[in-house]
Image 1 (cartoon, rainbow, N blue to C red):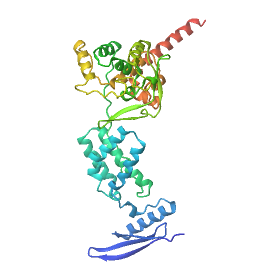
Image 2 (spheres, rainbow, N blue to C red):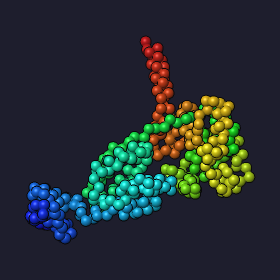
Image 3 (cartoon, one colour):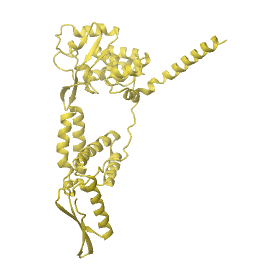
Image 4 (tube, rainbow, N blue to C red):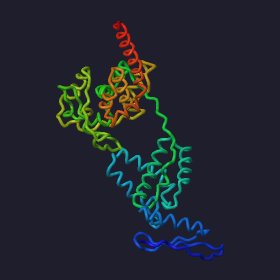
Length: 368
């Protein structure tokens, strides 16, 4: 069994100090000096002895690395397991917010209070989403340091972060979708987004072979995302393929874009090149929105992604339950669907109340 350490006194120009010597789990000797009182030295030695006994000891020398030294490997691992769009966000957060503040700092010098002050300063200058992502990068790097026994705990954890305020989502009614599609360069794509809930990247990655025209199904196999001007093709966002039904009134639209294309050609666009996401100001979709607003002053400003929300709203209004909406949208769980669209299910409460009232009336009417 390893022996308990020892405490030694020594003198400095500022007075007496105390030195703690102990043996690490690997048998090597270690020491820490500079304690002002013997009581502080005794307490430190007791903590070291307890940590060694419990197997939680962290060698102080392993914490003498900077955040930047650990960040390189951490970011490389994220690039290996996450989608390019997510990795782009992490790299941006590291480069803009984390590296300038923490890159040069040794991890054993970071205190919880230091991180809290950084979060406070960052929150005053940027939005909640930026703060949350930047904090996640720093905390993720330090999590690895804890797992590697470079730190006893993570000073970035346990900090209250600003909350994101959900943006108000515009939902189009059926007649508004019709109006928008009528002015769009790619009407079939507008209808598909608005009535299937596909993400933009999922829709433009569809190939002719992914269309089951007999059963009216679109088989979502891939997702094409633009990152730094380049399109990256991978699996859908949740890494799960799915089939989405499209309504009968879209048959003619889908049939029209299929005509003349081979099975491996893309459904939308030219057939060989992915359709680029339209510019938010000068693109064909924004132009269609402006034309729709000219005819209907109440027409909201929408983006292609808002058509995904529109699909959810239209499905719920048509009577779809939360599990059906979840499957259509490709959410990882029904909880995610409810978190996003719970307010649209409020009408169900009235439906339940009316149904219960009707059942009660029928029951009491038949009771002698």
